[in-house]
Amino acid sequence: MTATLSFTVIWVSPEPFGPALAHGVSYCGQMSVTSIAAPAGTELVDGIPAAARLHIVTGKGGTGKTTVAAALALALAAGGRKVLLIEVEGRQAIAQLFDVPALPYGEHRLATTARGGQLWGLAIDAEEAMIEYLEMFYNLKRSARGLKKMGAVDFVTTLAPGLRDVLLTGKVKEAVTRTNPDGHLAYDVVVLDAPPTGRIRRFLDATREVANLTKFGPISRQSAGVIALLHGPQTAVHLVTLLEEMPVQETIDAAEELGEAGFQLGAVIVNRARPALISGDLLDAGGTVDVKLLTAGLRKANVAVAHADALAHEMTEYAERQEIQAENAARLAAVATPRLELPDLNPPVELGELHELAAYFTVAPS
Image (tube, rainbow, N blue to C red; front, top):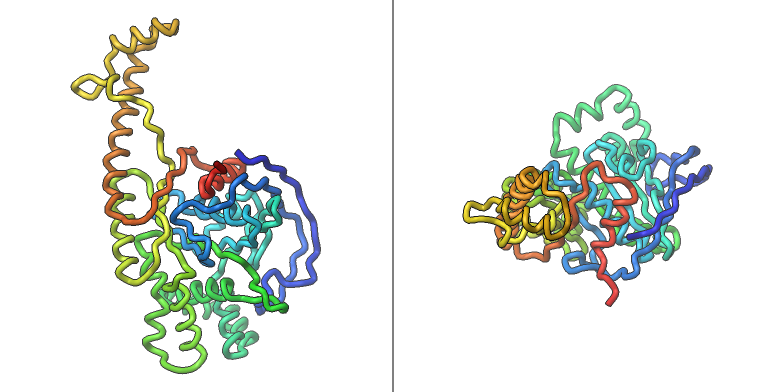
């Protein structure tokens, strides 16, 4: 368990949050910044490659992929790294997890660690990303903002959802490769809370479609850079699942699809895994808890037996759930990647629990 200390910081920044942001917007306001005690061990577990600079986290909706992405980002920051956590679905989920106001477009510090690590957050807005894109490559910032006022930017990104994905992945690539004036990388690691597994391959490969249409010029060069990053050894794609039939099947399908498309898989992360508490010798031939045996055990432990029937019913239901978990865990063997299990924390996950989850991504000291 990690110790936490919460405090509030008020600052006026003369610099834009992102050095490469075209807007140059500084922030004056009040946000919560959390100081986190780093885990005793900061060596990462199997499946979370330390050399990766971009960790992509996806999973079926409802599996808790955003929570997992945030916990992974905290674990990476605990090793003394500067980490950027990005979301692209417009839900302001990062702000909710870290209990801060909705994030304006820009990079905002969310947490610091005892080893000097930092965690920053960015909620990418496709319209603002398009304005950046037009200024970066065509020096059209003023024209782009005029188009936004007329609603043209939103119209274009809505009409062509593939273009929206191109803009989002392009911004992710910019964050990964950006350097400071001294030549050092702006961030050591970027963690992307990506779209669900049902559309993850299309999202990640949207730029490939653009590259097929543009063979020359800045768009072609940008597309080639995004493709090289997402398909290269610096990127790992992690799949979040629950030990339930549909999430496990989507995980198996996504792993196969991503592997065939040339993406590097990291780990399968089983979220909200329940511990095995009911041993087989407590169950009868029908798979239900033996009430007589349970009653005898309660008496032996000097526990009142009045609720033995109700307790047996609850235990039987848990045993059934336990069996379903075991069956789905066996199905996950079809995915040849390391597997990590996170405990069952009832949503919504609080900030202190998020810190506890982060420790599961690091190797405990021997």
